[in-house]
Image (cartoon, rainbow, N blue to C red; front, side, top):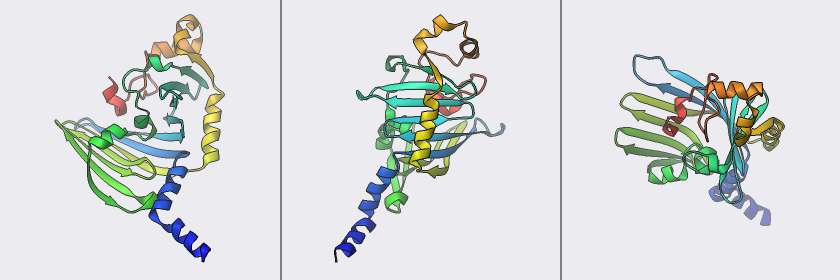
Length: 237
């Protein structure tokens, strides 16, 4: 009898939601970002991978990794890694521009924004629970499909009169070992403190990064290989 009760408990939506939350702490999720600034121009498409453990999250694009660590005092410490050079630049929490909201990094949409949005529908349960959110602010419409028990954006669409951006989940994996290995791999890169860069301008790598505009004060946005800020984080400017 005990085993029957136990299996019923494990099958209940609440139990599976709890399991989801435990699983989602170590994940690797691939996203595609599609942007259009006007009907006349072709779409700009990019992709990135979101990696996370309970206290750190990274967004990895082709040659760049933006990593954020949440410290015990809830402050955020960013590190920017350049994968080709296997080098990194570390920032102090005081050097971070703008929002110190870890949830916006961790799950691509902040708890604050979700709280402002209108829940339009809900379907599924456990790991498959999906919520659709909607928000209209001035001329901007934001729509989010949110996998609530995985703390994961399935899709997010931002539309204004002359701009649209769709971020969509392509695949997700919850292999803890793979995730830990990836963070450990980045951890081996040689890093320089942002504050010390001025003293190291003879370092060819740092000189190049300064020249390209990668090393800006407290930057936390996405950059392409030429150091141009990508519009996927256009609100940082």
